[in-house]
Length: 288
Image (cartoon, rainbow, N blue to C red; front, side, top):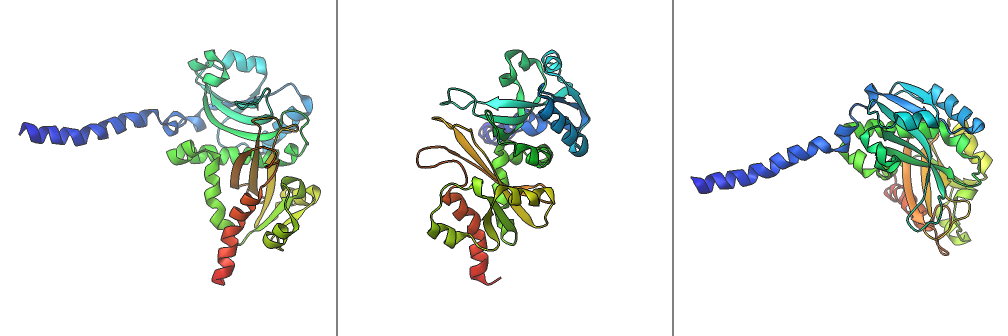
């Protein structure tokens, strides 16, 4: 009987431990997001803050929100009644200085005494180079705000999305076989003529930045547009982020990054193009 009890307990204990662990999952920690106020932290840059305020006012829908200054953030950051959306600068391990600007959501709480690094990060989305940004981030700001909100909603429903991060969006690639994909010429790393002839065509093509971005501003149906974020002057350890965004509903369909080297420059690499085109090729081969 004692042996049987030991065997039963050996099965129950892992279940009990798993049950306890679930209390601390990210999904549970941010379950109150929609009930709490999100403080949108302004930077002091009048031009950027004006764009951010306008796009938040027209697009933010998942929680109550208020705008605040950096000083107000410092005084409120330990209050777990709030979430905060901040514009931050990210520095990777090997970089000597921050190379990218991010839009980041963190949760207020006592851990903020140790700085923003101690706060629970909900999501952090790359938006531009930290120095000498191109200005293209203003075209994409509305879409980025929507993507962030979609990610928060998905993370509240499933831990898979909460812990998998924005990279999970690449699982949407099979759905792109029937969509038009437009790359800004500045978003493609060097590709030789043979590769361009092989992978680019009438439904997946490259054009100038202004023409590409016009599809986002016009909410073109059934279309994806490229967006890349990399330091203006990459250094050792710098990363490039590559995205495909639906121009109509602002869903993220591709999110990858690579370390910038002498061989792999800024923009979509040939391996990205191959991965993106694979599902389109399979469909053509199947004659669908």
